[in-house]
Every structure is written in C-alpha cells, then in structure tokens.
Amino acid sequence: MTNLPILAEASGNNAAGGGFGMWGMIAIYGLIIVAVYFFLLRPNSKKKKEEAEMRNSLDIGDEITTIGGIMGRVVAIKEDEDAIIIETGSDRVKMKFKKWCISSVDTVKEKPQAAAAEKKSFFSRFKKSENTEKAE
Image (cartoon, rainbow, N blue to C red; front, top):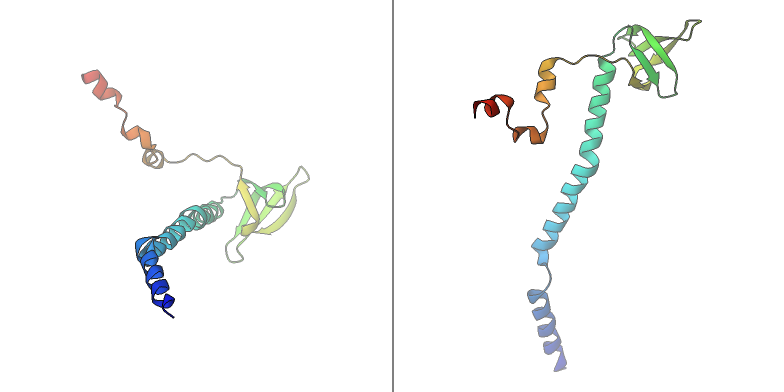
C-alpha cells in the first residue's frame, strides 16, 4: 500500500518532464495536415483547373487527342451538350465526344506577350538587366 503514492509521483514527474505534451502533439498533427494539403490536394486541384481551362479554350480547327488515343480535328463545338465533334483520318469520319474525354490539345497557340512577361522565373528578379549593366 505504501508503494502506490510513490508510483503515482514517479509517473507524474515523467509526464511533466519529458515528451512534447499536448501542444506538441497538436503542432505535429497540424504540420501533417499542412503537408498533405501542399503535397496532395493543392497540385491536384491546380491540375484540374488547368485541364478545365484547356477544354474551355477549344476552337474549331484544333488538333486534339482523346483519352482513348483517338486523334482528330475539331469541326464543331456544342456548348449546350458540352460536346465536340471531331474529324479523323483521310476518309473524314466524324465522331461526337464529351469535352471531358479530351486528353490534350495538340495545336500550338501563341500566348499573349503580357502573359509571358508575367511568368518570370524566381531567379530573374536577382539578375541585372542589360540596361543597368551598360549604364555602369
């Protein structure tokens, strides 16, 4: 019977002196949740957004590839059905597909200069421009 208070006191000292405690565990779980968001959820949503933008920017005459591997040229876009009609091969077979089945747009489109100027690399901020080098 006399050993019980000693055991309780010893276990109390270990819990207070070592380990992370409650706040440490909450911080670890918080870091895990943030890591899952940045490594799994955010890139996936970004990819879906880019794919939706690609599908909505289709024009007649674009060369596309479907998720099934069928390649063809867009001849009509039906917005009310969310579908496209493509023409394949030299015999001009026409097929109707839903927009979600488009894997890639193979037609190269020129991007506006303003968008290209916005996408500067991280290191371009630290480089000296040619005008400042000539002035020195």
